[in-house]
Length: 163
Image (tube, rainbow, N blue to C red; front, side, top):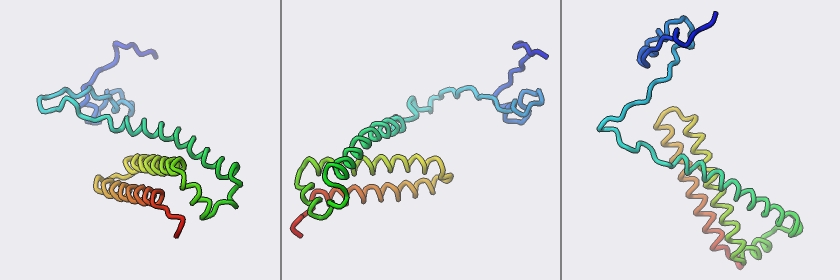
């Protein structure tokens, strides 16, 4: 049995929601794509921002930079500087005496925390069903991120080897 394109019955999108679908008896007929909404005078010209696109772009770029920072960190710490057995208070004090290493570790901290928080924001948006739950989870996650970034930055810049 062949179906000609002229035999297809077109229905409005509102009919698809009545459960009658296209009337062919196929359960998949009830899933009709709705036509786009028309703008009214009350509809703003721009209904969304580019935040999600910028967050997506940040994840990709920060991921690439983090791979370089973390692999460089591991290679230097574990191979070139004598391995884990050499890492102690004096090693960290000597390392953070240099502005280069302070900047390296600061960039690694900030990018890792913001990258992870952005990923958690996406997970919360995907799995938290209620708006109030989503708000509280993102508020707690944001507070924890800000606290960790500020505390880590404070430690890096106020580290005193003479304590």
